[in-house]
Length: 148
Image 1 (spheres, rainbow, N blue to C red):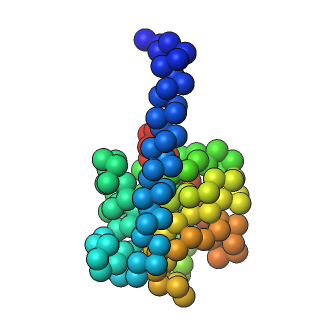
Image 2 (tube, helix red, strand yellow):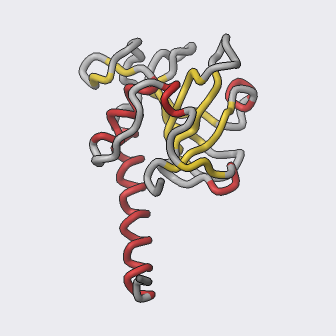
């Protein structure tokens, strides 16, 4: 059954608002330390623990491990990335497995930015650019977990 046009527009506005709210919530954790295998904001987060914690707050179930994102959600084109989508990356040293995830916080195709718990130099929740050489070469896919 098709929704009347007004209802479709209202639903699109609700979804956009929730995506903004999700990203705003994620940004409240900037500078929380990176802690391996943790999803406790009082102690720290690893990458998948951070993503899991943020989405759980909005009653959206996502995998707890980064490898669980390999076949999860609805794959989308980089050009169609939206706020709140998840970026999935191959491992830093093992390019055959999934090793990192983050949440899109500025959607602009290949120039998008994402928030994530980084185990790199910064060792904390931070915002990075998808088009940086470090992440471009490890990029696996973008997925929509909100409208899957």
